[in-house]
Length: 90
Length: 244
Length: 229
Image 1 (cartoon, rainbow over the protein chains, first blue to last red):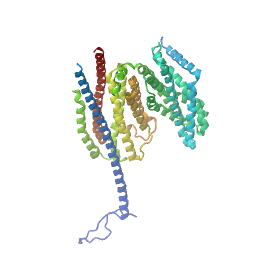
Image 2 (tube, rainbow over the protein chains, first blue to last red):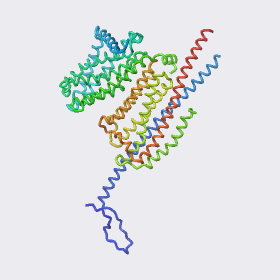
Image 3 (spheres, rainbow over the protein chains, first blue to last red):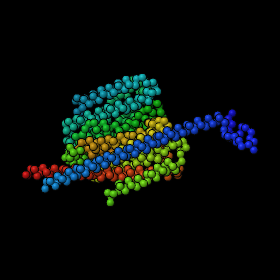
Image 4 (spheres, chains in turn red, yellow, orange):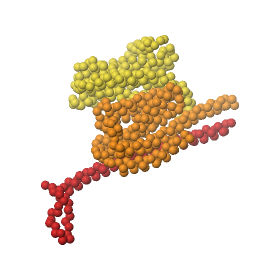
């Protein structure tokens, strides 16, 4: 039923400036568009998943990095405290 | 004492424990009753399952029950030691450390297999799909012993370790379940194969036996280190305690 | 010199990372069966490898700790265990996201998923015991780490023992060249970052231990002086 060949449906007069638009018939076009829409939806959903996974990975590493940084700060404070006490008691 | 009498030492220690147990039957009764309670709870939860779903559920029920009873048993066995402070006495005695481990593991294994004497018939009674366990008693026995052995070997090691420090019991649960789950998983797979009459059942049993060997060997090797280790880090930790 | 190592690693990783992302998204063809979501693979797989590597490291360090009573090994074991938790979280989160994108199921009780989750739990228990355990439990924790490390080959071969939905062991070995070339930079970037974090954490743990000792000595000396004054 569907006509896939790219032939004009109206006879063309070579001298005429009118050029018919060539393409597929409507049924095939609808079908192709449906497929494309499905593929596009899947790609969009995939990208969403990708963004989430990379985002979460970064968040995890960042949280760990921050916890390390905080521990380093605490240790520095303790070290200074200890040094101070050592200086006080000769 | 030369080893080879390792087995004899283990046997003496186990016999001591069992003798003490036979006086008041505390552990056997509480563990047994607990198995019954767990069985009833699972029965209530899953009574509405159809036959096919039962086959899927029963292995999990059985080995979860074993896990719970095992945790209770181990906690109780080592609590007793801790209360009477006999663990330290044992450590000082001229007894090989591994013998302590093997003795305790033997007692735990005995209690667990004994509780299965309640669990397995109970399951057969509650769920028609568990009938193959009654029809093939030898295979069921082998499965139960191998599975409980895997659980016991890991559990005894860590329960002893926690008991010898002033350990907290909650940590035992935290440690025990993740560590024993691979072995319990194998046991579950094997049980399901038994219930379905799957041809690979003996293979799974073999894999379970292999895990038993590995965990037993590892535990025996590590037992000495885990118990003896209290000194250096203890001094450090307890002296520096409140700062953390 | 060794003190600068983490910084160097992080800088190099910062450079490799944009290159890696560029390769993954712009220069790798879209995989035919799974589509764009397959790109999660390029970070999921290196994280899984790293998790297993850190688990084995922690286990080996635990063995050294038990045999030689080495403080360095003890600290390494703890640091590696924390990295197992970090990379493990990455694996356990990106895996289901990928599964959800591709097959619609996040958690399929697949054998490798389950054993990886168990490995994570074991090392979580390790970290908890190290942190909240009583005085003598460092060696107990070491035993935990060793058992956890033994869990790693079980994970690796789990896919062979049970039939699973997880892509098999041969996937990586049979990757086409372009995908390999995108996998490498991601692996390198992640390894550098993880190792840098490990080194920093290791140094912090050693510092903690040293501070403890210093405080003990200080308090002893202090008490001693107060006795005599």
